[in-house]
Image 1 (cartoon, rainbow, N blue to C red):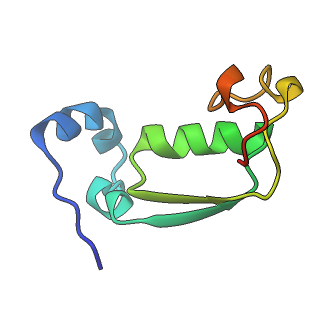
Image 2: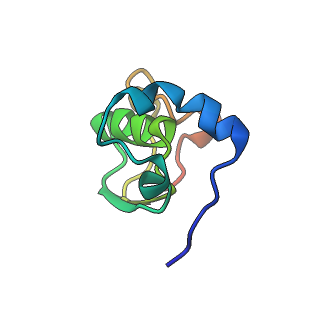
Length: 85
């Protein structure tokens, strides 16, 4: 299993998580998560997983980005339109 060392900067970034008694940031850094779908709801989930410090996130989606998705998708921009998710 890949183990990621937590740097001092990361320690500071996730400092508030330590107020949760059972929280283990190093365990979260070692976590591998698969998200099925990259649509609007998944965009929020993916954003939050990344911000909380999940070490490895894989996204599977066989759709393309539409311009109508951009108002609901924080992870895509206009230059992503037409690209596979």
